[in-house]
Figure 1 (cartoon, helix red, strand yellow):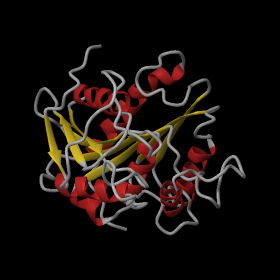
Figure 2 (cartoon, rainbow, N blue to C red):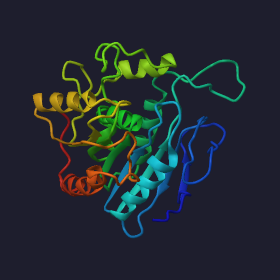
Figure 3 (tube, rainbow, N blue to C red):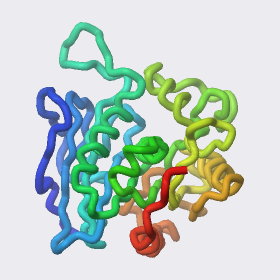
Length: 282
């Protein structure tokens, strides 16, 4: 399938120089982000919903085409406007050749909240939060933010092969793995382990769809199992799919196993959550 790689509109969310993509379509990435932006891809007809989409890249880069643009076009085919978040990266230099100052540990969350604030200015259409890999962790963190999530009329959280909780220094899987550099990245994982009932602010109060790979060495299955267990213990709404032979980063491209069907499963799920009435704050 051929996609138009350029967004219908690009909205800066803060001051700063425009960002530059590295590489060529369809493998472009952002290796440095100097200002947060929303890249909007609009459905062909009247939209029935919206999505805030967070691409992965391990908080070291953003995999813009594979986990941003291509997923946005899939959402467009389902009748949703898709808004790809280009967020700054924790521990990354604030400017080219600068003075050594770096973005703080929660800069991606700050930029995600800016995006939610922007989307809340037009709240009539229901919103989904969606993220793949580290973008799934960010989407999950955003889902736990209370009032900003409600203000944007958010109905559900869709996650793919994401490091939700077992990168936290106290819950690591496999046990004993080293901390992630830079320190700001590890600090963000420590501050927001999503899905652990024993943590005070990490259970998404939304319906959750999650897919992952059973033998993923980059993101062990414990991340998903912890999330499912935490939501089960608290009466949460979660649909989880664990695929036996999927690679990490399968997104929409890898068609070699049963994980090729996750978009169909997700489509059925989002039909349900988009029709669901918004819930009051707990």
